[in-house]
Length: 289
Length: 264
Ligand SMILES: Nc1ncnc2c1ncn2[C@@H]1O[C@H](COP(=O)(O)OP(=O)(O)OP(=O)(O)O)[C@@H](O)[C@H]1O
Ligand SMILES: [Mg+2]
Image 1: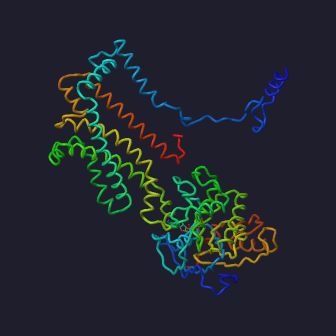
Image 2: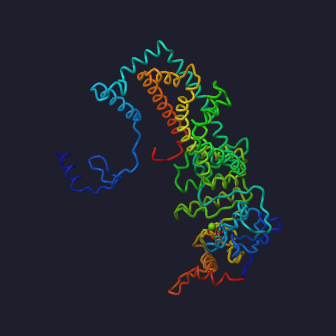
Image 3: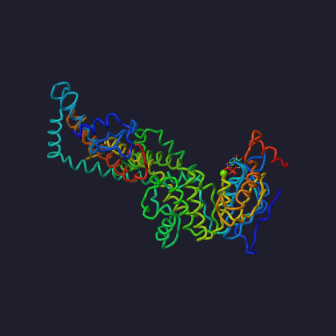
């Protein structure tokens, strides 16, 4: 009875001050429509890929996707097992990963050093920026014959190629972010008598970090893509090698195994970079949240 | 041209000595044209002047931030100069304590940073990110960053310009207290005549590229109700080309400037 009275009273008198909202009174403040993406939900980044897998599985099962077009997931799994047991798939994955990690590391280091050098000095810019832009506009595929001529067809050619193609997105994005750092921070550093090294460490690098991480996401992807290309040349191992062979023998299922491995690595690597990004950029207040 | 007796009272060497300072941004005319100014050690000088009279230009010259500006003249400033900007200019990627101690080369930098933050009432916020601070808190943090260096000269360009009236009054008390403890010479640019009178030992008004007025503030009490406050305020407002209790014959500051600033 009393509860009913209270509810009625609240209904006829909705103008309670916000401080007294709650309890039996309804909350009457105006909650604005949200324009950003809203709070983060855990594991949400798995939803899209899993959905894709589901569509693939259902399509194959129902016959919409013919095996000639795309091998069914369970056949891919069988082929995966076959490759794993009989053809040292793990060893091939290991070789490919080693090449791509090594190349990526060199490319990242080179890209950052060049971006800082060309971003902070006019001499550096004059020397570095032009050649990088030229390199950028030449397709890597077209460069490979040249690299083969320079570095032979061994590991060093493969790692160098990957380093050079990952260097580009790192350089471009880091350089761009670095040039975009608010000039007032440089002015501040000058009034605080900060030296050049300290300036780079405390202002330039953190300021360019968002751009660098974006570049890293691109670089990770192209380092995997580069594998396919470089492993076509005189390889005895590696995922790209396995796929090239499968193509010659028309083994679609093996190709799909390779594609899935690429997809999984690309996705995991990108997720890792984004986790780093969220950690490292917690000082920002953005839509990312 | 009219100058009240101001300037140095002691025979000490001044902390700031500016002679015949010229600065111009283009051929058409100079912003500063032969400016002379002395500031004694520990003296608090407020700089007033209409918008565009070169207050920021003067401050940037003293801070050594005007490499790309044309001009000449003599400037002597102490070694330890700190600048407080109108925006708090905290590095967004550094936590508060790291912002305060940025560039501070001392073995006990962290300890000094903590003490400075406590002095401005921000104890316990050492690990906050700048985006978590209110405008007033951010400005206090930037004050802490300036004072932790124990400057002999503190340059501040409208440091409280973006704050609300109440926070401003609190910041005035804070700044006065801090200046009494640390005793730097201070050059504070402001638009607010009351702020200048409340804070400064001496007030200079810039116009036509030079110090046009230079008055010493000799009030028994630093409050708008103190005897003499109103007169000084009216005098300064007059010097700025504003008359109190303006009627219909209000003259826009821009037009006044055009008539008064034509020495050439
Ligand atoms: N970087 C610049 N390039 C060109 N002109 C400039 C530059 N900085 C200032 N000026 C000009 O110099 C004059 C003085 O500028 P300054 O910023 O010193 O004025 P101020 O007294 O600080 O004004 P305010 O009170 O509005 O801040 C202005 O006319 C301004 O337009
Ligand atoms: Mg200004």
